[in-house]
Length: 227
Image (cartoon, rainbow, N blue to C red):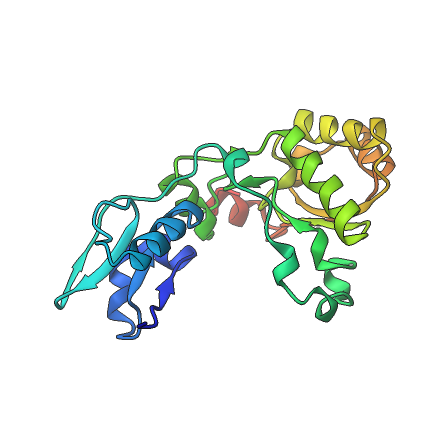
């Protein structure tokens, strides 16, 4: 069967059908959340059906670019956990940047509520309807699944800004402690969305590192960037 090249991610979400101008090798572009759209594409291709009507999917047909809309997953809990067993995890276990096994890399949300002018996350978040978070029950279930399946106790929470909500982070930490989930983890934070008590709780729950986007020491520049 004919090989199809599918493009997704930030650039595809920001530019949609304009991506076809960059390369004649691109057959299909997914604008937005890829999971269910990609599944619909595969099903359609298997049956030789048209891709017309699949939201967020753009494709070439007789020299023309067709497609419309944006693919969105409103409830992130509907997504299954990643098939980590399909990845050669043994090749990634010693990357010091992630403090251990990549089996423990995960997102608990998508998007970012802030409006920093230099950041593409801002526009992508707006396109996809705002900052979306997974339920903490869903997040804890994935962590337990990873611990029990891959025997790793090192995690990286890769949310663009994990500390968006102090209350959510505090409850996340409390659940780790209550359920006696013994892990260490790092995250990305915002300096205005933590305080001493929360940091102590995060440390108690296994947090060993927080990456902050300081950007500048100049308040004038921070104001200009809407940081």
